[in-house]
Image: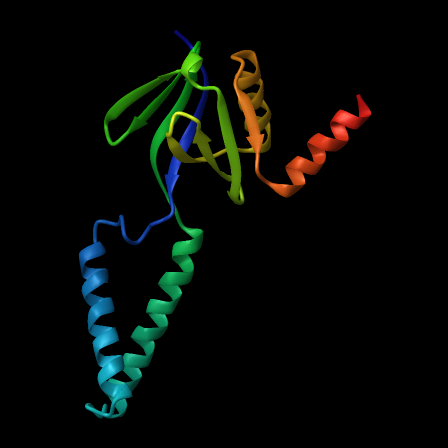
Amino acid sequence: MSVKMRLDIIDYNYFRNHKYASIYTVFIIINVSIYFLKLFDLIVLTKPYSVIFEISYGILLLTFILNYFLFTRIGKLELVANKFIILQNNISETIITESVKSIKIDHSSGNHYNLKFNTGFNVLVEMKNGQISQFKLFCKNHNIEIEASNFSMRLRNIFKQNQS
């Protein structure tokens, strides 16, 4: 059984899934608490503490912005012969291609795409341009309909149909 294609399953919650997430959460709670105490004039910060608070608040804002760009690879989606194999958290799940009638592809950002199977399985994967065409070919060979929800992809499909 040879693997036709292997895609990375990704997750955007980089800081929430990080091993130091509890420290990050405590840091947020302390910072928000100090902010509200300062907002209602229940606490007055002296100059050094005020600078430390402003720097830590800036770090929090930076991590929220970075969380949008950073991601972790949490598993693999393998396309093998007549099935999809999902390897995630050391658990393997198999979906037979005959049970899948359609897959909706939503472009998330960059090379990231949401795959929504009609069986109810949803996954966020990383696919480069060549892999997208390979994935579509695999689905076409197994009689799986691809539904593109991206506006530009729908326009491309309309123009391709008109040219043929």
